[in-house]
Image 1 (cartoon, rainbow, N blue to C red):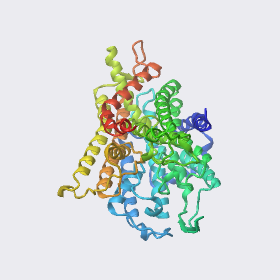
Image 2: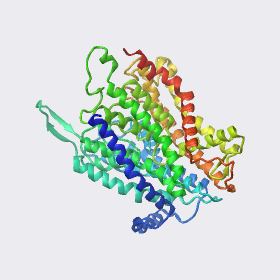
Image 3: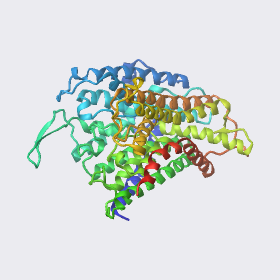
Length: 571
């Protein structure tokens, strides 16, 4: 076993060591139990008074959604105009211009929905003001929005009949003050110590070894990088994201950032068990998610470690694996693991160029986002998995001839219809958007399609199709990474992915919350001999099979046209 592989194992092992106690802490925060962080209560009460909300008032699932969607709309309007007029706002030492309306539309939606799909380069596309008060602000609040929705679902899953699912504003505020902000401060301090800049100075001019002058952007990077990873956001302060030596200086920061990407998503799975006093359920969910995650990680690491088959066919050895588009300071294994970690958690940051990964790695990264339920983004990861639980309960009920039940409540036609629609929405968005993009790219010369530039793709054939498929998959999964051979900063891609981002974010939140709210209001039926247990390995195996069958039926044809066709066409 080489040292690079040991590094990957160490990263995941340390994540588990931290995630279990963090999950216990998160459960206590959302349950409102006394804890050491209660010293923040006066600060939180001040925020409630300033915002004019009553954080003690219980809300129904409809009131939760109303609050969530309303505040997100307000953030959209604020961010849109801030990006357009950023050149007229303070903290712009490098004199960067304002964004065009279509780019601002895409950017603000992307960050409000926790995607961070960047059709611009961070150094030149934003000012320090918009990096901090638009992008970093949205990275906190978008992550907290997903966590608040999950906290409401936790309460709905408790074993009692209720329509009161806690208070959105309380969950939202505590997610920031007691979870995201403290962890971000710790991570930012580590990054600063290792060399990540945290300054408001403008560009520095340095003389290279060749004697040429080069300008290097600095800025308040460490603060943004911390929350971009912990909140499964992923938006880079610099254009090349965490492959940039100032965002990710060395192997230690690479380990810390990788851990921070998957830490909260895994901790929230354990928080479910602590919140419901049902550890077996959380371990069952964790087992399903981890099985998929480990299989995808192993597949990608093996593919990258084996090297490029086209180079191997020439008789050239690749002792370090496939190193195209990767940083030597990280290596093939850590780069492959990062790629799976980010696509599993809807993070979207990169420490290597996904467009340069081998075809099998690219396929696994896309399939990770297509499934979108192996850990997932903070909060919304389990919301997506919850849909598979509902469908799994329904199928299991049909198989044994009993009324489907989840935690003592009957799952009836209304809940199953909502779950089915949400499950079908994800492939619908990805495949329809990719079909539109493929047709538009082919017919860019027609008068009706003059909006489509002729130079979208830097690669022909299957890889070019993969670039378009990846972009729409990333948008629908609220991920944000991309195959950067695609020219995406134009009106067509800004508008198309903007629509996919909105639908891919809010409907998968609305659906699970509606199901949870409807089930919570039903009478709890005592468990009997025929009750389906959802906290067993058998049900976990059923859910795992269901996830892969649905993914295969939905996405295999598209993957066959893209990365699989590319793989089989190589020597």
